[in-house]
Image 1 (cartoon, rainbow, N blue to C red):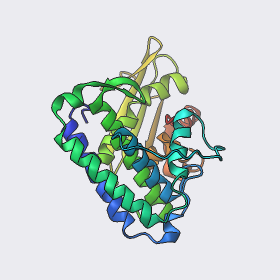
Image 2 (image 1 turned 180 degrees about the horizontal axis):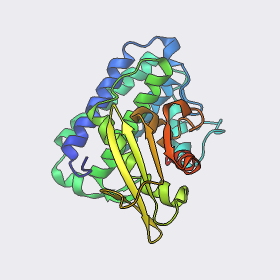
Image 3 (image 1 turned 120 degrees about the horizontal axis):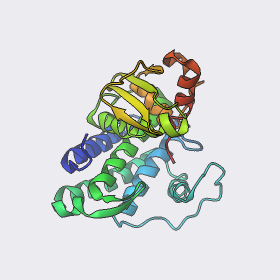
Length: 271
């Protein structure tokens, strides 16, 4: 999916926010307080994170509250997120949902009316300077990934084959050359194949030549290893929600098993 196609990105973002709202309407207070795979975060905290970030991006202000428990925080961005989340922990899930709806509506109105040059202008993003359209693609992925965190925690799957699922898997797939080459240290001249079987289907071939790993159309040599998994497993591994050991039953590795496990264990590329 093209990062610069901001209209399609906005559709992904808005559909995901709407799905979060619709799901939120069905949750009991016990479900709101259910812990997710995000360390220290409940279902409610995931909603608080998304709405808090959008408040900040929209210049809507944020809480002055500072979280005191930062045991699971790894970096300054994580600390900023934790302040937003902790400021809302005394609220009910229904109260957080109402704020989420309000913020999502304000952001949707703004983004729908913004001129094209707003989306092409450079902005500071988690991956460095890039057009706002790219930043919004990252926001869409972040929203969808947290929606999946919520759904897994409460056992209510959905949105696994949505447009935003496609966008998110494609963004995460971009890290595969770095994973295969730099992190898993695949040998020179080798080819690795990653097959994602669905609901989002992808097949990626990564070759290492002259010390660099890159996506190629077809490997010129037989693969050193082929790794097969469904897209839900891939997302959990690539976002650090679970380990290869924990999800081993969902993985099929053919060829160099040890190298395949190194690739799988190196998939987490989230900060």
